[in-house]
Image (cartoon, rainbow, N blue to C red; front, side, top):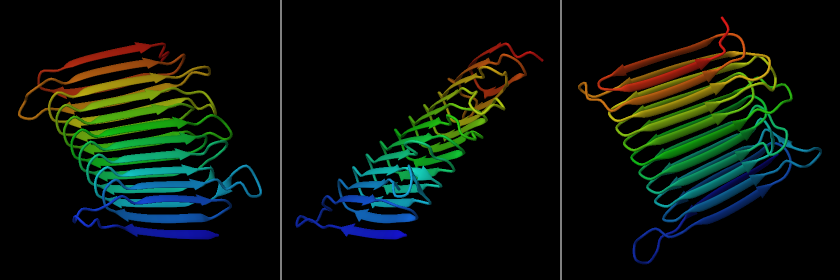
Length: 280
């Protein structure tokens, strides 16, 4: 087991926080890295490859906490049962998590960002993945890409919660038994989910979107491929004081089974639902 703790605090002569740069690389099992950075233009890169004794490590953990503006956190983890977390407080923050290059399962990736113009990118491969993002502020962007390809696939779960204006939440899932949920509170928010299916069988897609405020856009596409399956989508768009501007588009395709879509809108809204091949 390897544990690495990094604490970086810099203060410039002018009284402003200066840049901190951290690079941590670990090989083996039960790796643990904790990084705390305070200042301006912080950068932290963590690589846990777990290549000793096999193609991937086990029980890797990485945590990055950054205070200040223009922060950047990059976490790459290979192997099983990975846990990665990022907390960024400030403006113009960037967080990237790349999990399970090769076969990997039971991975958890989480990001919390407070401030404006924040960006979060998460990619997870193979089995039983969970991705979480919480953003507070304006002009935030979150993207999740989960690729449950095979090898005992039960599916992936992705959750995004955003509070503020002009937020964008992008979720894309492959494999089977997928679940995507997005919650947005504020105005001019955009949510998009893409769910497919097949590897592992079972063929279930589920999407839940809730948007509170004005001028929202929700775009949900669900598809089940060979073997048939069931699509399920719930969209709720609630305006302030009855104002409108909401738009919802749901497209569902299943070769057999059932398609279900429920759209609730309050105000002057537009909704389009297309269902194909639901069977019964």
